[in-house]
Image (cartoon, rainbow, N blue to C red):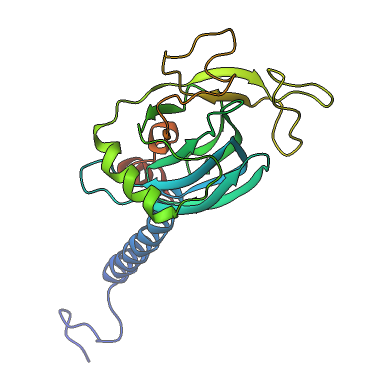
Length: 250
């Protein structure tokens, strides 16, 4: 017979059993929470970009995570040359999205697109003409639709971007309806939303009612258009995520 102070090894007191069970639950809960937070942070940190784009005359798309000297640009795999509208569908965790654009200095110049940006924080439309877009001149002109090596464009942009001063874009007419035109130069592009507006950089060096879009002119091209994705769709912080999710795993 066991003495009053002895306890059979396979029969722990009820209180000890309850504490052990609670400990196991807390450990399992925290492990599950860490898994959820990891997946959540990963999803929120990725930006999906979809839509269509055209440029009169040519554009390449890149991304980068910062804008300091020595920055590296990543190709988004998007290249468009007028008059074709190219489909865009890619995902990146980088903060900045860039478009290198230039014209042929001949008839007209402009950029038209209807991007939708999706992340774990929400969905936003970043159509051309939106104040979300900023632009800066690159001051190194390129012939229209000459399709220079993409790596050369990326290298030239990486050298310039850290010292560029980005400003608001010049906004022109909308993607016109069928059988209509914009400035007598651009017709309807069915792939792109009619809510998209032609945009460009205004160097202030061209006169006329349709400047800087028409007639042809070199507005200190090539141009660099920029979207700050983090500013548009900020990634939720770990603190916020923990506060919302920890109650599930108590």
